[in-house]
Image (cartoon, rainbow, N blue to C red; front, side):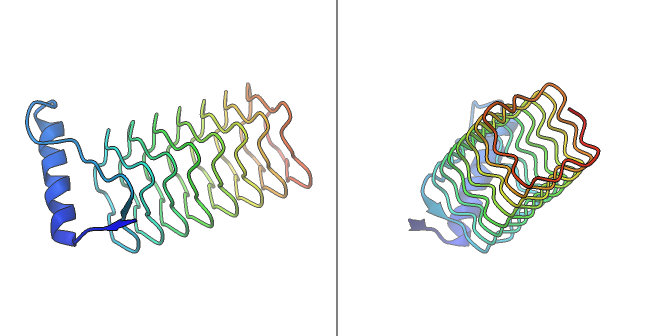
Length: 187
């Protein structure tokens, strides 16, 4: 795991912001693969389209951060604050969200297949059309979550709270829903 200074991180993110602002003609796309960014305040940062495979965001404040179409496969978000973060169309395969706060996060069309999302607060999040195949969401709070059209095939939802969630059109084939709370869930 590579640790970089805050100055180096800010320089990389400034180049990334410039790259986005100039429609990819100047600056440089952020490459933070395998970088340890744990315990930092990165709230509201714009990581759109960045390559952050295997990055460590443990215990980070990433509230309202934007990860649109970012590559975050195998990234670690353990105990991170991801409330209202924007992950639309992000690649989050094999990511670890152990005990993270993801209240009101937008994960529409995100690929979370085989990710560990156990004991996570996802209340009021948008997971519509997300790929959660073989993901582990055991003991997670999915209260009032939008799961319309989501792929939950083979997902573990043991003891998950799915009360008041919208699961219309979701693929629940082979999903493990033992002891899950499905009170008023739309299916």
